[in-house]
Amino acid sequence: QVTLRESGPALVKPTQTLTLTCTFSGFSLNTSGMCVSWIRQPPGKALEWLALIDWDDDEYYSTSLKTRLTISRDTSKNQVVLTMTNMDPLDTATYYCARTSFGSNSLDYWGQGTLVTVSS
Amino acid sequence: QSVLTQPPSVSAAPGQQVTISCSGSSSNIGNNYISWYQQLPGTAPKLIISDNNKRPSGIPDRFSGSKSGSSATLGITGLQTGDEADYFCGTWDSSLTAVVFGGGTKLTVL
Image 1 (tube, rainbow over the protein chains, first blue to last red):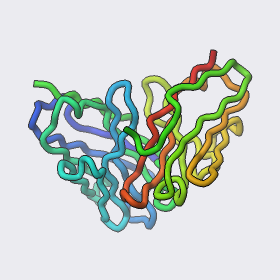
Image 2: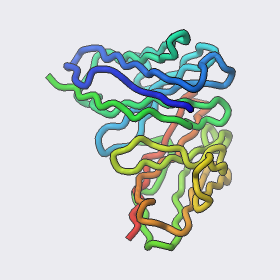
Image 3: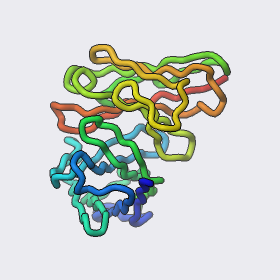
Image 4: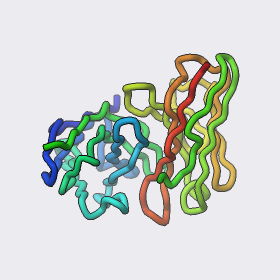
């Protein structure tokens, strides 16, 4: 049974760095073809993909947010961590992590999401 | 501005059918598999179509997907009130080396 769960602060101040953790089970990021993505969704708006890390430890980032994002993994803990620097109120959104299958490009299992509000 | 283009909304009566379009380019839909996601109000997105036209286990055959060139279509037959949701298309963009989504389509079952 594949599950993913996001954790992190619900509130951050402008200019601070956000750190989110995705803890997963039911699959291994060491398995060829396995990837984990981070996606966000501002209230009432569309999905926006942020970053992906794959089984080979390769990292991919949204072009528009590349300079602010870092994705990393800890395979021993089954965790993927996303950091986003210089947070702004426009970054207020629900942040999701999702298992992603290389080749298929599908995000087949999603976490429940965590709402992050950026406000002073 | 999303890389993939979807209509903002569609509507139909219960029991009827509806299609949702998703258009892109050769760098995304044209040369990669397309997926479709259903997002019920207040919940996380759920994969309903992968690899252009494959339904994950548990997804009813009322949902179908197709692709032609740089466009894709999600079809839903026998509409139910429980199908009211936002639907998103997504794929890999080989030029951007990124996952890209459509802006989403809100389905209303009248």
